[in-house]
Amino acid sequence: MALWEYLALLTGVLISGGAALLIKSESKITVQILLSFSGAYILGITVLHLMPSVFSGGFETASFWLLGGFFIQLLLEQLSKGVEHGHIHAHPGAKPSFALSIMLGLCLHAFIEGLPLSQYTGFHDTLHSHGEDSEDHHLLFGIILHKIPAAFALMILFIKSGYSRTMAWVCLLIFASMSPLGALATSGLKLDLPILANLVALVVGSFLHISTTILFEADDKRQHAVSWRKLAVIVAGLGLSMFTLH
Image (cartoon, rainbow, N blue to C red; front, side, top):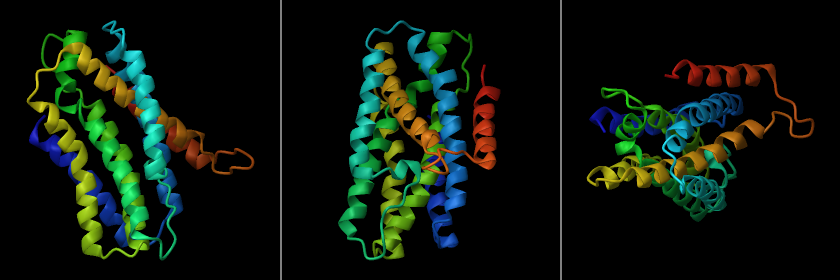
């Protein structure tokens, strides 16, 4: 991975967390728009880019790892309480341990997502035989994009739980560093294609869980209605993922 990729992973989270402090409110509409776009984009790149890369090589165990990623995400949300989907559950005076539990779930999730990042472009090129090195950053952009609303919600959660701004920034920086650390953990290893396929499949399972949960959460839970604004943002997210298809 290039230096700019590590920096992009860090700055996306930090800028979003800083924006939460500036807005000084949950800004539900803003979060919903970000979530709808990111959920649609993640679903699009997962189906159009990541899954074809994983399954075009005929790797027999990738399907099991995909299911594993889906259910690992289900388990991690017992800690994170759905902050990946932009949910903000804390009320003023919430115990600090509540926020730390959520942060732990998010950090584990982010670290797992980062594991295949350092070698994904080479993995993709080997399977698709481009003839020259390509710049396939779909996995990178998917991770960055869905962490933006999560970081926004997490920063609000820290403040509501009574953390000082300094401590909230320290916690946010730890969260921001998890995916880069995951990438660094595998950057010096020479992983075989089947292992890389399994790691990507693990992330695909996680992406499928997150994106479908976001999109299935309707604006009106009683009537299962989706506003035209949300529908337009979803179409835009899917359109962007299709526009980058190659």
